[in-house]
Length: 448
Image (tube, rainbow, N blue to C red):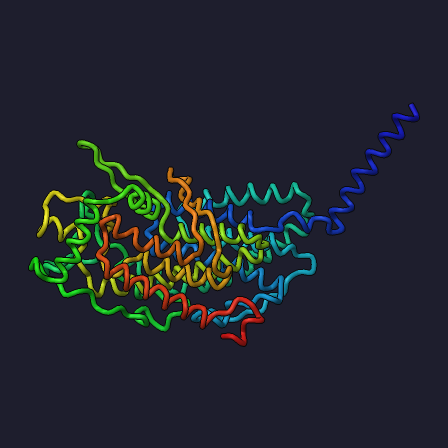
């Protein structure tokens, strides 16, 4: 009987000891790496796909939550530098964190709150947040610490949400739709859905670091001509012949980087949509993979995602500015009219003008930024598309991946080469400009 009583006593003391350890701060290892934020980003990607946000809008939805999560990391660690005062119109604000705030949790709370504010299907995000928070609670974060941490993260989130509301996005929802022109060189809606032009006023959205949407204005596209001896005809013929002679590897590359958020399929009299990740979402996935590959902690992960989000956002603004300036005809339309009326591209042509290539711009902007953060060479396994039925691909650098993403648009049959070449140049300029404007590490201030 005494032995039983002694065992019960020891058991009670062990429980009391565990509780005491938790209350005395023995929970610092609950969140160390970026796995929770990566999981939140994957959830956000799924919601973006569900809600069918276009690629430019998706880049906005990725950027602001990532900035909010990063700003908490800045408060937690003085080696990181705030983006407040560096991004256009992002006003500085002093935040006083409670003494017992758990910063990794506060960062996660900031991410969830901003992300939820930018989507339609809010419940899908909040339910994921609740599951993550419950798991963190069970791992030993004390109730008071938990509540204060979440409240502090949401305070930072409120500042970022207020910043997002001034970027002209909401006003642009009421701007007039694009009116298709009859000029022979201009973009026309393409089959099978003949969708209207997406985001014709995206150049009116406030960029993060660009002085204006047209700061890195591309050279004009090749002069339009239907003459078989003309340069434009030859560029279209190149697309035609490449598609007709694709290798299996080229097809794999095209499909891997397709990233068409809303592909319309037609079978007989039935039309149905296939929804997938956006190109910006693909690169946000790469940023998360890189952070994990490099063994970055939660703060380093927040840094990588935030700076990539900024690069993608401004990349889309710069690209869309040119698309609706040149309003260039797509290869599918041109080839069907002047070369072969039965020809089809490998990939479905997206519903907006051709020049410049969006993939080329945003991939190179992201690649320059990620190269700054992680260095070069940097081998990584890109598994972003596995969830959508595609295999992994491996790259030796972010620039290697960007080059492949860019040329994939030729293999897909949806861009002429000048859009790829000049789009890549534009993206590199956006990335370099970003790195000259924004520093995420205090020791890098002298360099910038």
